[in-house]
Every structure is written in C-alpha cells, then in structure tokens.
Amino acid sequence: QVQLVESGGGSVQPGGSLRLSCAASGNIFSIYTMGWYRQAPGKQRELVATITSGGRTNYADFVKGQFTVSRDNAKNTVFLQMNSLKPEDTAVYYCYADMRTAAGRYDRWGQGTQVTVSS
Image 1 (spheres, rainbow, N blue to C red):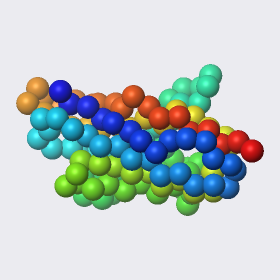
Image 2: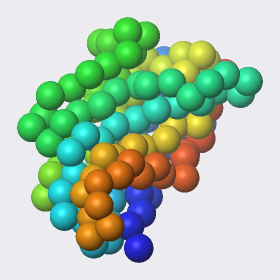
Image 3: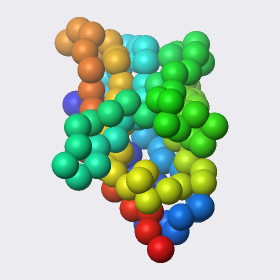
Image 4: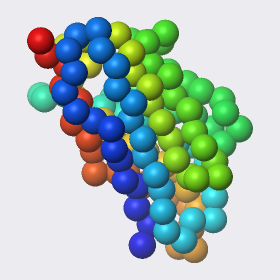
C-alpha cells in the first residue's frame, strides 16, 4: 500500500517558523514531482511549492522568499520550511507526489496537516 505521511504541522505565532515533512512509503518505483498544496477554510486547494527529482523548484508567488521546499530522494521525503508565518498562512497543508508504482503512474496525496498561525 503506497501512502504519504505528513508531519510537522501545529500552531505558531505570527513571525514564527514550522517545518513540514512528508514521507512516501510502499512499493514505489520512482517519484517524479513532489510538493505541497494548502487549503484554507472556505477556499480552494492551491499550490504552495513543488520540486522535481532533479531539484527544480516551483513556488506560488505568495510564498517566494518565505517558504523553501526540498527533498531527500533516497528517503522519498519532501520538506517545506516555512518562515515568517502570517495568519493568512493558516490552512491544511497537503503533500503531493507524482509517482510510478507497480500499478502505473499516478498522483498520491497525503492526509493533510493543520498549520495555524495566530497570536
């Protein structure tokens, strides 16, 4: 069973930092793009950042310079370092992976981790 397990969410004051992690496990042949999306209450899910297996990154304009995405290919893990957090960053953050398994190539999502920024 292939799954993505996120960790690192929580509550933080404005200006604080959090580091999210997401590990993919199971019978995975390869992972192409990994990344993070988020969904705030009453809003659609939106892209935060992605990273290819070669390390090419893509960021939403609203997090450039504030968040950093990275990955450890050997451990099938992607990270999101979030600095200078603002209340508007409050959302459920979802890990994403485009992967190839014995069943073929498809997208996989994590269960989501809550990030709350509040004083």
